[in-house]
Image (tube, rainbow, N blue to C red; front, top):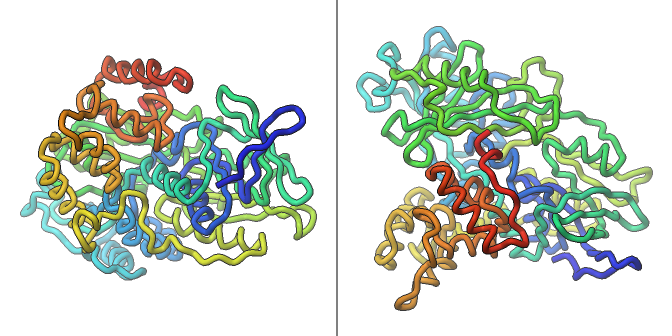
Length: 535
């Protein structure tokens, strides 16, 4: 944990720490977790909510990136494939295996090319329990029912699904459990090297400025990484980012089975159609360059039309813009490799150190690029490198560690397969808590894993309850939990990041949650509209 605040001569509070991490997306939270778990004092600051931007706006896949093989990114794919099962085991409540169906379009890639790609995908990295790829006769399978009749053959392969925003939160929870200080809605407005380290200035929302003294600085600001170097540190970086917008649409459920689809498009891109939140199908993504402020990016109507058109090439029932019930976009900070096509820009990452005028000055690490599947490996490499610059050696630990809520052994005994383990966990919960609505129990199990005990404890005594039901399926006990344990500070934090309940509620119900929040926590409640989510 960062040391208790002191004070400057002017009365401004001062916090001393080993490492200041700027950026509360997946890379910043992952690095803070790894550092704290190795015994360093860490402070993580984020200008908005955890996962407020890119890290809650992904396609929500744990995957190697099948299409990257076409760009000969074998190293990136191997690294990501090696992480798949490791991540799925670490948090079976928020991540699970998912099978993908690729209908074969003879006008796209030939069968031999697809077979070679899938063979490589199966064998580039060790695979212990995810099933291998295979062919499928679509007209004889339920997997072909939603598709146009001219798609007669296809292929099936394995990857995984993740609740991306909760993955970020759980990394922050674990960092805090290991002693880190997490400060949300607290931008770093300036940083400079001083004797023996860094001095940074933080500006908490609605509070007095805070000075942080740190031995090292991590710039994990994602799409704002280059701007942070230029504006807050006054050290323009040697690298440049290409900001690429990935937009998604959500429509009412198109198919009943539990597989996802990957569709090849005439422009050589791909889109996914994925089961989402029970009642919906998620379709994405686009690759559109962003040249303005990343936080102002929105889904264009042209992108909606593109996704609908490409999905309609495959589905028997056309997808139209009128079907779209939600749209969102995330700006991906991709390392500029001078590719002409935005979709061809590498998804790999680079860790770059700046040690100032001499090697013995305090280090600053900037994270360029990356993808959600490789966050743990990135964090491990970043921590190893930071420790080396600080003259310390502490062993890595996250490869086999479980994320908060991921240890289900108290309920089910020894772990087997993550998907089977979660199913056993839900059954055990239902047996032990028959008084709790089954749908609520399942949602809480997905969100909190074994940390569901923090909520269920409130209903353990006769006559106890979860408080008022603010809107259907959302009780005061959960809202209080998210405030106390997960840094939720607004209704949007709850409805669109800690959960996706906003998708299941109407405007009046969402406003009811916002009103409850401002009544209960007027000191932190922000102006809450659906604009940030329904963009």
